[in-house]
Image (cartoon, rainbow, N blue to C red):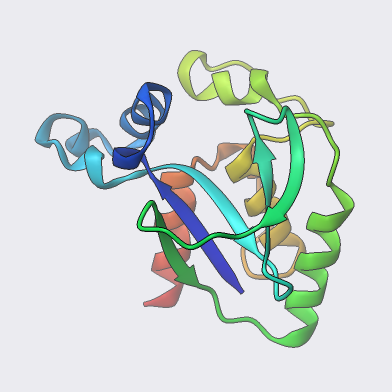
Length: 154
């Protein structure tokens, strides 16, 4: 299954703040944070991308449009894993965006279990599919999710 990460360098100020804040400590001062990510989506076999959107205020699905703003990461998984991941993520369409959880990366606030921010949703979907071990999905930022998935692919 394809996971796509939005390049903060292509985004607005909020994208850059998220990328800087969630980048590894050494990247913050070397400038490497500019190569990191501020958002993540999953691409389903139907060509729709699904994620929690702060702009829409909920989990939504829309047709994926390829651009240089996205970095694609192919995550190999068997049919049953892909089916479980897809079933989970589609069951969350329409659920409200977790603004408090997103602020948790900045202020250390607690996550709201009945809502999602982007990387939390994708991490939990991948946990449901058996790609990632079960843990707290709210601990993942787009950057930490990318690093965790990349580590598993090496």
